[in-house]
Image 1 (cartoon, helix red, strand yellow):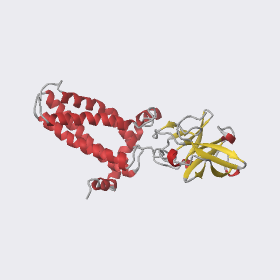
Image 2: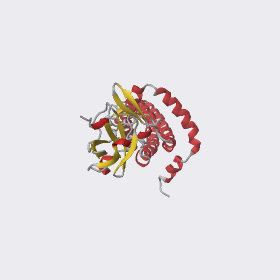
Image 3: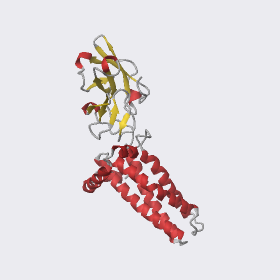
Image 4: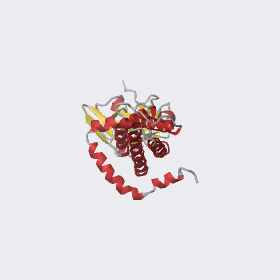
Length: 301
């Protein structure tokens, strides 16, 4: 049996669904403010915020554990281990907030693993806090608590890695489009079959694309063509709603309400942080044609 087989069992643990639903409801109440949600998702950064914070936070904690595991003086709040634990504890609130924000917009399997991941981290942070108190008092048990906390932190990190790499939570699910979509012009069908104002799905080579035609839109005949895959969790964008914002057409993902500018695919609102790959469009005769733009997310102009 491989080590990750047990984590796969967590993915299938339906007993976690009820507590996950209760936690998700609480988190989503705090994320009703779209600006707060976007900040925690990392829309402003163009990259998920949680992984970077988690790397520094966990790195501080694990470094403290390594120092404690090799011995050295236990007293003094200025000891390197105490400083690292304090740094990890200070970074914990924003790390947790960003993590819960991403978790609340994930699918069931991810949420089950995420709940256990969070539980391991609660144990870890509690033990590190106790270790810091004991170290500041000059007691040797602080070192033992730090080592125990490191074990819990390692378990949490293992689950977090599983979520990120095996379950692709936080990954850009449209990353490969610019590399696998054809770079030469592809026929998407007759222009007459593309309705005005209603998104439709077409195929460029083997890649599904989203097509929107607007009388007042950008491009030839008001045409905009994007990948049909939402970068967040691969939702079909042609099933989303087109909204008008200050004269710009935006497409809202049908699954988790990420919002993108149709003209260039750039993110307006999360949870997505990566842009939708964009295609150039033209009309030859009566046929609509498109080819992928190799730098997705660069504003059209």
